[in-house]
Image (cartoon, rainbow, N blue to C red):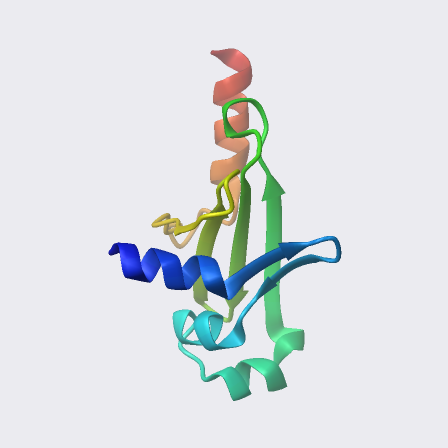
Length: 107
């Protein structure tokens, strides 16, 4: 990702005492929507927030899902935001997180 795109992405995500906010103008196209359609259908948006531990301490990963579309970002400890290029297979349904946890505990 180009430096200008990283800067724009970081500017679109704000972290504050009330939580994390992502600008709909940035999020909507990542899910194949317009900001207006996203805002009108927020009840269909599924979000997940994960807080890093161990070597990921200080990081927050956010996953957004709308229908079959999804987008995932990571907020680094210094506040920079990067896109996570992870794409699940059709049958993964979050199983990868369990597999990673098992690998960490056994290794």
